[in-house]
Image (cartoon, rainbow, N blue to C red; front, top):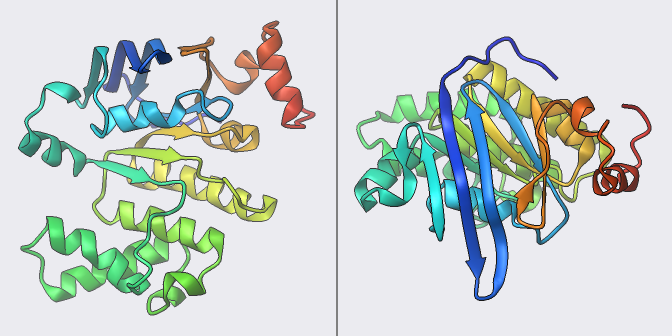
Length: 256
């Protein structure tokens, strides 16, 4: 997948990132550069540290060593106030959608706006809600509760709640996990649409090769705390690396 909107501005710059939990080395010298307008998929088996990586990028975890710069700012050196301001520019799409079950779709989308942009009028809030629901194709769900939505719909609403603040960076944590193949395709298409229409730069954490192939400009594999080679889907999976071939074969993808 290629996109002409990518430019040379670096939005995330990670150098020699290390993170351990007790004696377990999860990240052992990670280097990654994300350019504006680019989608990068980070692949790997469960438990390899993919989610730890995006938690560090968003400031939810601190690295043991190395540097993580987001929009030019070293994330673990920021004050709480500066970190909260930076997070306004980062959208986090959680694996479980992270919707408030006791709130309607409208209230779920209204919450981040009211909390973070208190100067908006009621009509501006309503317009923003209607706009993002239209973008994710779920205008009809505005008064429904999360329990009334399918898994794919909840994923879409979760993305909409992130988009309502118009982030510059999107972090997707297993966006197609638990979804049927048709719904997964819809989510993949939405990720590409968000990249193109909102001009976002994204890191997509996934073990789904179809998702990586269809949404990412570049892919890499996280294994044993380090990244394998990084490149296009075809470049990475044309490698002679046996672990990459095994991961490819396990996902039952028959075309390169």
